[in-house]
Image (cartoon, rainbow, N blue to C red; front, top):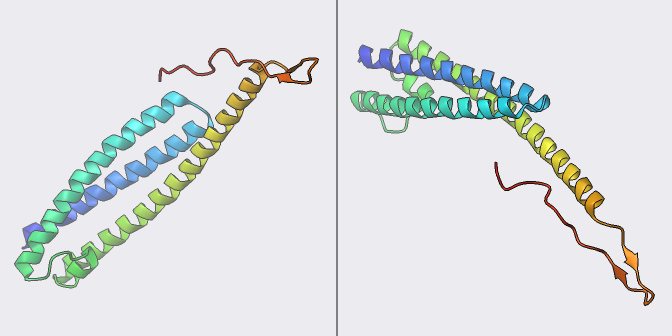
Amino acid sequence: MENMLKELIDILENQAKLFRSLLDILAIEKKAVVSAKLDAVNSARIQKEAILALIHAGDEKRKDMVKKISDRLGCPQGLTLTQLAQHVEVPFSLKLVHCAADISSLVQDIHRENEVNKSLLTHSLKLVRSSINLLVQMMTPSPVYFRTGKMYQGEICGAVLSSNV
């Protein structure tokens, strides 16, 4: 039982490290968005995807280990770390509660940073759209009025964006 608890704590500590590195990447992404460095934003996205894949793999390990420990203790399935801590000895229970609190705090920080980055990206997208609208308006010729009073608006020619990404 001790070995399984030690392994679970190792998994949780590794998850916390991954969450901290994700938080660092989000800070890098925010700087890249503010300074409008597309390459840095793309690099941050790739790093986030890699970290998230590792987090998901660790989460599966955590679920499996909690299931094994729950089965061994005769507890119901789907226990949280705090609930599991109530069923194990003192040094392990304290460590589990500490890991759960640490991960919970990190997840809240990540959520907050992600919301900030989302709002920055949304604002940047609005600025790009307004720039495109301005360019389209500049490309549209002035209306021509005919003797009949009808107006010819002209045609918009050319393309502002290419289809290549």
